[in-house]
Image (tube, rainbow, N blue to C red; front, side, top):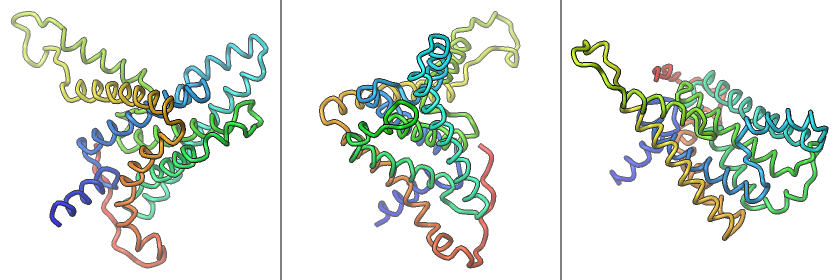
Length: 268
């Protein structure tokens, strides 16, 4: 019983209102694995990396010059879907914050889990659904999911962690490695010495590693079992998002009932 209660408290803190450096790091690593799996596995299905907005902007520019309007529409569709996903996260988080809910970050993760379940169960069908953007619904759905997830982690970590693309992570990792390899001259005052931030170094290395492992798992899973591979990933996110929602059940079921407001979240 004590172990079960401790597990529930731990899960609640991972996606709850109150954030710590440790909870942000653990959740960031889990979501980096999830993003790597969906991104790499999705490429095998739609032949596009649906979290790679830099690539879509470049595709848009190239296709405009070359006059390939089908690719222009596809890039615009993916960009808009990712943008709408990030905007949806902002709306949900701010709505929950104004009501002092524990589940301000759990709500968008719950939506991510539900949409991933939809993708895993009926993804093969949506591949044949046309859209005005010359790409199937699957591409827009995956881009929307990636926008949701990336914005959620960005907000909960105060823009310190990204999980759906690795450009910034690799850049920050390189900066810390450069500091670690820097040769401080003998006699340099301690406050002037260049030192790597070991916590940030481990975080960025961990995010990169989890994204890579997730990508390998996603590619292997999609190639062997297909869309249904994402169902276990969605269930993990569902389990993570439920404890804060359960804590907020009174507020969600009876929004007009007066409740003691939560204190503002600490800065992280």
